[in-house]
Image (cartoon, rainbow, N blue to C red; front, side, top):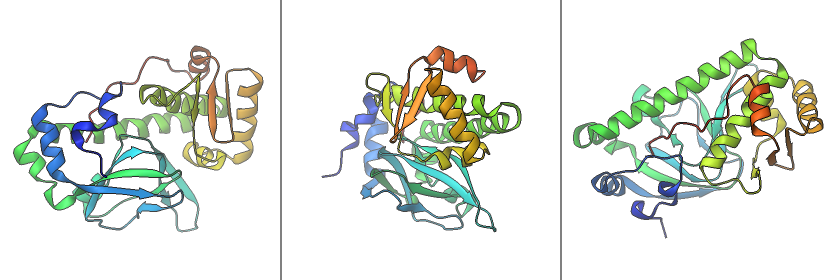
Length: 242
């Protein structure tokens, strides 16, 4: 049975702003079902024009682009609450691909009803704009990381941001959370070699700041990790949920 929007477990998470009752009812009309996929399943393909939009209800994935030589650039990491497919709705086709890295459950929305957002619920249209701006900000931070941070600081920054989001999604238990990615995924996202990534992770583990192995991330000292990453450990801003 598909989860009703009124009973969505994500709405109770610290990360998301509250929705008014009429907004929840509208989202329920917009939702056409749910999709459950296994790790490795492509959700959206670069260059495609999918008739569907998704919200990640549970599980994690990757956004990435493939270069002509076959090399991959990870754009960012998909976590519960992320809205997928917006680019195809606005630009006419996807500029990147999305793939599940764990078992995922996705809320499915009919793209043909997308523009009714702007007619019936201007506040929801603003939410979409906000989400697009957040993605742009993340890419900007990633560019700073690639250009200015050392490999160790870059890895620290990425792990900290993933951990902070995991905390606000209630995915962290005893300073530990599932992180179903490969070291290569992190290396691709940060423009690092796998060797640099592996050495940096080993240094964090030896310094007892953070440990990532067997697809679990454990952060032992969040403030020290933030200092090393040249950022802060304050909670991420609350965000809308679609």
